[in-house]
Image: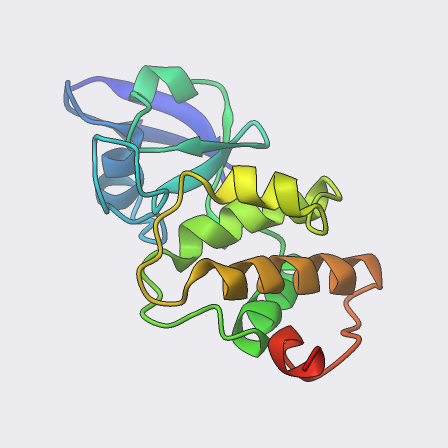
Length: 170
């Protein structure tokens, strides 16, 4: 059985895989990391399996294990705790979480936007979310959560309001 060595959430990792497996299966089945979800594998249309590969969002269901050899892979668990806390609070405050199935992938994508200072750029957020499917919340609340998270992150983790945007702007 072949192996792949890569950095997973900051730790050097060697994982075995079977021919034909994709990175999503390696992460879930071999590494025990379950935040990336299988919503459509191997079609790459739902975004539930989004991870960061060398800091850039990627769909784990479309990547083969050799493609991550020697690279850094970050899942939701690998996002720094302070940033995860800001994202989580913003998503809850804005009502952007319901069933939670798509949330890890969207939050990884949101972390990328926050880190690059793009959370307030509606066009950048729309482009980033184009590959994500969320059937529960509606996308406006997700847009609001990402914007709120970006503003709070830029303010050192301080939230400007306890109220969701949709209520504050009424």
